[in-house]
Amino acid sequence: MPGLRGGRRVVYDSGNMLDRRNVFLIGPMGSGKSAVGRQLARLLGLAFHDSDADIEERTGVDIAYIFEQEGEAGFRLRERESIDRLTQLEGVVIATGGGAVIDPENRLKLAERGAVVYLQTSVAQQLARTRHGRHRPLLNDVDQERVLADLMATRAPLYAEIADLTVATDHRRVQLVAEEICAGLGRAPGA
Ligand code: S3P
Image (cartoon, rainbow, N blue to C red; front, side, top):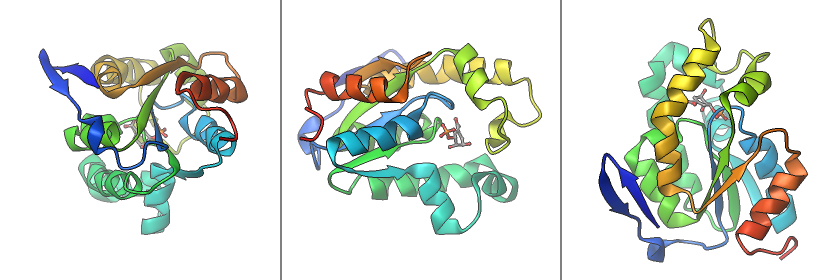
């Protein structure tokens, strides 16, 4: 699984993959990772986990509160622990937080422990999908379009770096995206 990072070629060793059935969804806020992940897990007969929900369950508080109390740095440490633990499970679909790929250790674990699927979406679509919620601290009380565009500029190469498969989600129904992932990974639904 070769990729580019900072102009250097990074080669991930899929030979270490713990469970080839595992599917990890990456992509920005509002790309549909949780909805698609749940559906994909149903189609493939796998268990579904969401790293943000996992962190909330473990801490007993929501992501916004963690950002408030510990800052983004504190949240990223918790996210790293969650990604490490969840990616060691077998037979799972995992929806990751949009910023999980910032951490090189997370990228390595995702790349090596399962098939990584990048849900690609436009900033306009992200805006439409995230506009009404206030549970994403990075989008509260800011120029959302600008923040989403800036995050996309820095993160898009990181998503691409570890993606085994890239699927567009703009204006597409969850079921269709999930089916396209099954086809793209060469997995028959129900198998
Ligand atoms: C974040 C995305 C969020 C959540 C946190 C930070 C990010 O997850 O992890 O608010 O940095 O893009 P979703 O992508 O599921 O919204």
